[in-house]
Length: 333
Ligand code: KG4
Ligand code: ZN
Image (cartoon, rainbow, N blue to C red; front, side, top):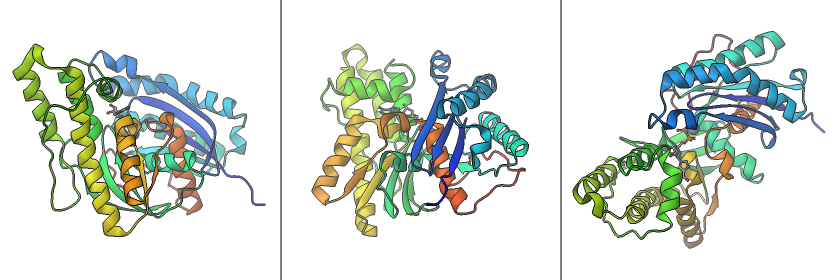
């Protein structure tokens, strides 16, 4: 039997400081997440400078706790896998510098990992049977991509947002409705009590790109026009319906175009219960197998980074210790 491979994942691209130990890309031994959400809540969104400072304060404790919880020593780790982009540059640098220091001191390979590839890889942890090729809809706070996952480290972008990311639209719309940050979870909850009675526009292009600014502006105009007469639960349900319809329409077009039979969703918005329900329905109607990560692996965490890092490591994608943070890193780079 071949030796188990242990990866130390380090994630600090936005407002979670997270470190994890993952075995063979699929089994989580620890996944410690120090979230800063409560700190950023009062500003209505993530403040980059505050995020960086908090990462600095947390990172060494989180590394220590992740190793302790996994009951492994640093000597037993095979690869150090930090997120090096995309994300907030100051935030990324904290995790990346820590990873470089650990890699240098312990003489372990450094495996720089793409944040979005991490979100996709979260599915490998939840679904031990999932193997490429498949289509992945990545919907997070900063990104909305339709990705053809050709192999574990081979990706093709089929479509992306031309303006707001889906999570960003959830957060902005929630702010307009006075629901606080982050908007996704609260909209998810309130929508369950409402009906999609407000008509919101859907935008489609000839290719598989997305646009959510029209939906967002329509919500803003409705709130300004109707003021106190607006039914927030109904507006949340209408917003979710419009966004989900746009997403599932493009997913279906893409799988038909490529002849794929497996669809995964990933990123913070893949936690959304209405999106999951509609994806399941679409799967049943079209003979597609639908995958999504367990809730804790949908939003930012280091276990998903260690999982993606494992496949990079196995493919021989070792980084130089000069690796820098790349805030706008493209997928597949
Ligand atoms: O993937 P993520 O943790 O961070 C980025 O990489 O951007 O995603 C965060 C986003 C936020 O915009 C948040 O509002 C959204 O995910 N989100 C949700 C839900 N939970 C988190 N959106 C819709 N429904 C949810 N249940
Ligand atoms: Zn993310």
